[in-house]
Length: 103
Image (tube, rainbow, N blue to C red; front, side, top):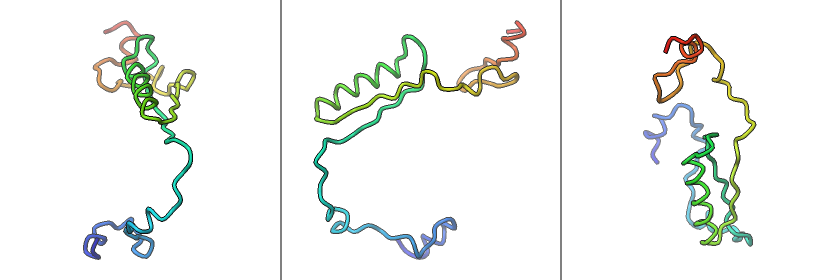
């Protein structure tokens, strides 16, 4: 990367920016454990297709020798629920309209 390219990135401190070299990246000792992969899904629906895809992905990754964990979002706070005027992403549904019965 040239100085002119870095000048387009005002948030990057040039003195701390180093392009990794192959000999330094692969110089470290290889890990002795299998790859560890955390899988995430965001839907809390009972029949969540994103959860089903994550579960199937975990099975495939395990077949390749990876160690997998699936993060279950159940119990996390839902900050958008119950806020009047909030438009839910990907829908035309608004909480205040539904709450007031004015779909």
